[in-house]
Image 1 (cartoon, protein in one colour):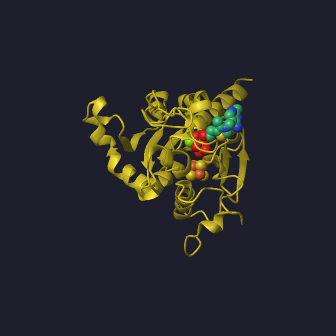
Image 2: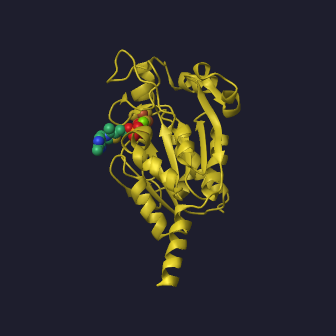
Image 3: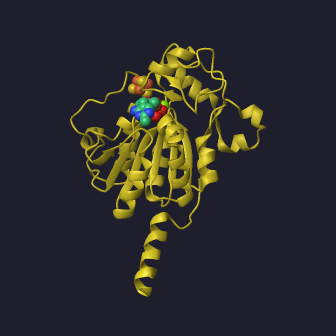
Length: 274
Ligand SMILES: Cc1ncc(C[n+]2csc(CCOP(=O)(O)OP(=O)(O)O)c2C)c(N)n1
Ligand code: SF4
Ligand SMILES: [Mg+2]
């Protein structure tokens, strides 16, 4: 392990493309810190895929690693193929809320159902950030966006709960004010098997914060902090009372046969009988 952590050791000599104050700097850095603390000197044991959007820029081309930058919403299918062909690698998907649970939603559900051995990290900034702040399936009720100037009239999708219902092996949600918890969660998720999903509620001051009336990034982070409740606290609350809160913590951790195990076991059986 390198003497002290520096994200630069894991990154190409390029400047990240994010706006000042964007939470994606912290997400990128926390992921690399987790990798470092697990003892990986480089990213040669990892393969990344991502779609299109601000969050999707995290691994590609910035991480010094093999990565596939795919179409908007289509990062999970190539991750699945890569994991089946290269089962010894950690396959990690980075994507935004629009990418993962908007246009890419069916891939997300089926990957969880199959218990596909990948880690999906979703940066949830509650809008389509890169394209200017359109409403997303994760936009809070009544929040104004470029396409809902009078406030969103839809209730947001709970991606973590959906992943649990679909069969994920590990699900957690944190925000960019829960950096230590997020780092520990990433470390755990990298080491687990099956479909792992970590949602990271992250500030987008440019396309979300300004529009909903936050003065600066500090105000957004304060809102994350004051508005977060734990999974345990949420369990004891009525649904209408927890509406609008950010439920943070681990939602599930369970072991069941994974896609790779099932496919390779079947291949062995077929080869034996044929
Ligand atoms: C098939 C397709 N539809 C739409 C787009 C335009 N587009 C690019 S990124 C994006 C949304 C990005 O939002 P999100 O996935 O939440 O990522 P963020 O930028 O917020 O991190 C959209 C609609 C596209 N590139 N391809
Ligand atoms: S638009 Fe939002 S999510 Fe994208 S880089 Fe800027 S602050 Fe970050
Ligand atoms: Mg987004």
